[in-house]
Amino acid sequence: MPRILLVEDNETNRDMLTRRLSRRGYEVSIAVDGVEGVDRAASEMPDLILMDMSLPLIDGWEATQRIKASLATQKIPVIALTAHAMAGDREKAIAAGCDDYDSKPVEIERLVGKIQALLEKQP
Picture 1 (cartoon, rainbow, N blue to C red):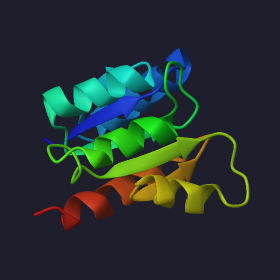
Picture 2: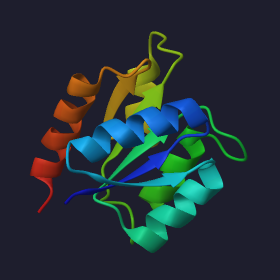
Picture 3: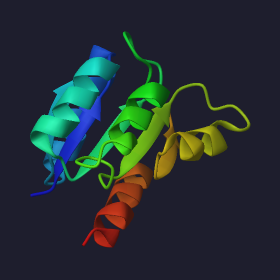
Picture 4: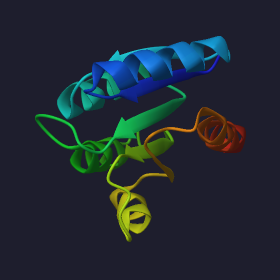
């Protein structure tokens, strides 16, 4: 069962994504801010991280940079999630170290496709 760390401060989004991903066979753990996301990435070593970009304490951009800067966590794939789908956001996410990007509201089948593609690349 692949383990996903969902870093999301919005309770409605957390609940919806957790339920939908759990039904598809993923084990989901939660972090509610960027600092907790970085800490949980290191302590739990998930198979993949879904990172909201608009987070309290430190934003998803900074959290991803910290995760990718650590030897222990740098190989964990990160998918950026953002409600502010603006021109250049995908490029900004990739530059921050994200492996892929998806916009909100989340279309679950599209997101699961991206999750599966990244998990299949893992050794």
